[in-house]
Length: 81
Image (cartoon, rainbow, N blue to C red; front, top):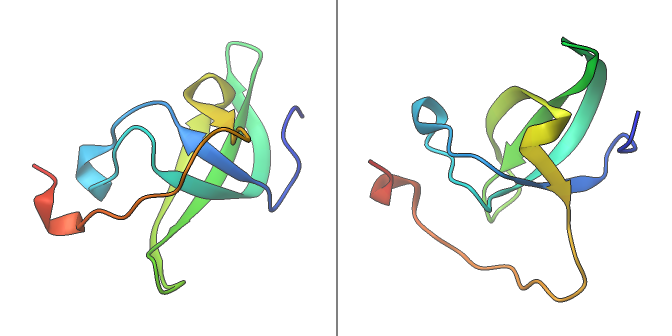
């Protein structure tokens, strides 16, 4: 397991069915095998007010840790197509 539970990570891919975009931040809530000997993670995504808006499962290759030179920003979910 590369990432610790309850740490925030960045999505490296769009997930249109959940209205999520590459660069969105999610919190790791579970760890499990994802196939092809790759780790998998269940992630919870929150809106700016702290409400859960999505729960997704992704392989480790589709997330990365936050970096110190990154800045949070806000976007509307309605703007995703």
